[in-house]
Image (cartoon, rainbow, N blue to C red):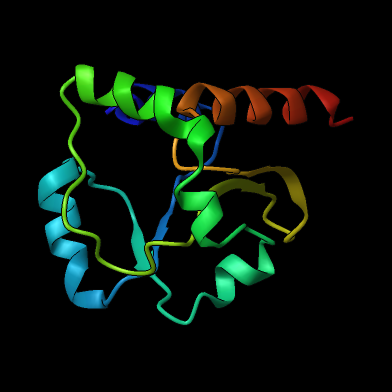
Length: 133
C-alpha cells in the first residue's frame, strides 16, 4: 500500500492519518488484517461524515467508465476487489484538517480510481505549513 510509504512524511509534518469507512464496526479488524493498516480507523455507516465532507455518492460515480483504465492498472499490479463491506456507491476523499477544525485541503474522489495519494496529502501539509506566518 503506497500510503504506508508516505505515512512517515505525513507524520513528520505533524499530522495523523485517520481512516473512516462506512461499513459495520465489525469490519474494522478485517480491514486491518487485509491492508496491514495500524493507524486509527473509524466507521460511519450513517454516512454523516461523508455528507459533511461533501463527498460524492451514486451508481454512476462507482460504475464510471473513466475508471476502467485505473481498474485495469490496479488489477495488473495484483490488486483485487474484495467483498464490499459498506455502501458500495459511496466515493471517498481526503481532508487535511487543522487542530482548530479549519479544512486546509480537500480532495473529493470522482470515481473509484480517483484517490488522493499519501504524497498528495504530505504535499498539502507542507504547503500549508509554508503558508503559515
